[in-house]
Length: 168
Image 1 (cartoon, rainbow, N blue to C red):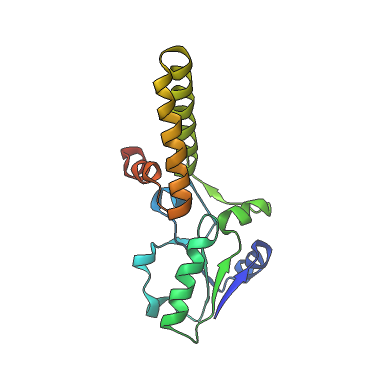
Image 2: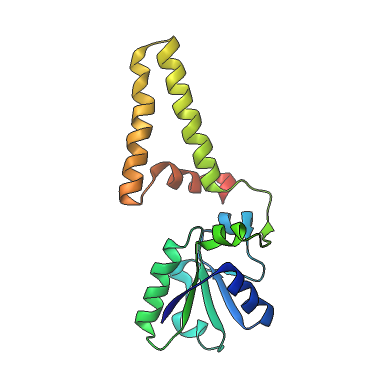
């Protein structure tokens, strides 16, 4: 059965030391910031039989909680008797609860995305104001791309940022 768990409840479980905490985000996000004692496994790396063999409570988390919910549902479909917990609101919920994380030195990809999109929009607006009004196409394109990303769940700029050498 898939269950939601709050950050405070997870902290209590972690203090009892009987938890298999799985971070399903990408390697760069994990290196940037993660919950102590979490292991990083991409959804394709999860061995469904192995994670339930230790008799530990399995808790999944991602950035905001959405992806870990989907993976938890897949785990429960493969093993209906399994208890899988999902950290409510992901690592962001953990941080909002004021709990500590391990941090690396890198800027998270999502922050790089915000910075990149903002700079592209600002550059397009300045070029449109001072050079040629046709440059308004640039911020319009970014706006439509963000709408597409919100509707489809796929963001080309974020995908490209993941492939950059500094994010490997």
